[in-house]
Length: 202
Image (cartoon, rainbow, N blue to C red; front, side):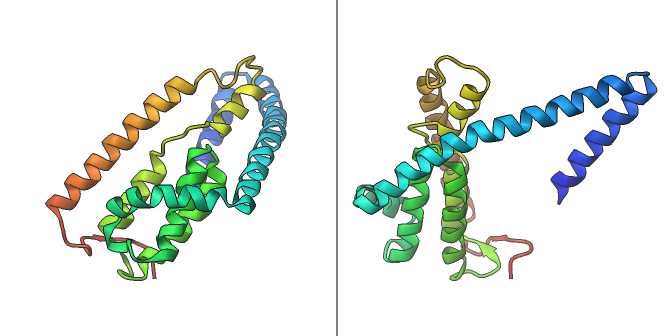
C-alpha cells in the first residue's frame, strides 16, 4: 500500500512539474515511450524466466531438486536448528534457496512465504530468530545464475548478459555473510524467540 502512494505521488509531481515548466507534451511523450518500453521488457523477461522455470521443473521431476535439498540440509540445520526435525519446513527452505541460487526471485518468493508460514505456527504473531534468519537469507541470497538480471540486460541490448557473474557472486556472498552475521548478533543480544512482534499477522 505504501509503494502505491509513493508511485502515485511521484507521477503526480512529475506531471505538475512538467505543466509548470511548459513541458507537458514532453512529459506525455515520455510516459507513452516508458509504457511501451515496459511492455517490451516484460515480454523479454517472460521468455527467459519461462525458460529457467522450465529448467527448474525438469530438475524437480528428475529428482535433482531433492538431491540439492539433501546436500543443503546439513547447512540449513545449522542455520535453523529449531526446525531441523521439521521436514516440511526444511523442504520449503531448501526449495526457496534452490530458486534463489538460480536467480528465480519470482519462484523463490512464494516458497519463502510458505516456509515463513510454517515457521510462524510455533510462534504465532511474532518473528522468531529462525524466521528473521529466513528473511535475511532470502533477501540477500547468493545467486549462482542471476537469471532475472541477465534477462533485463539482454532486453537492454547487452551482448554478454552473463558477464556480470563474478561481480554478482562477490556482492551476493558479501551481503549474505553480513546479513547472517547481523542476524546471529541480534539473536545473541535478544535470545527470546518472541522478541519481535509482526504487525498484521493473525
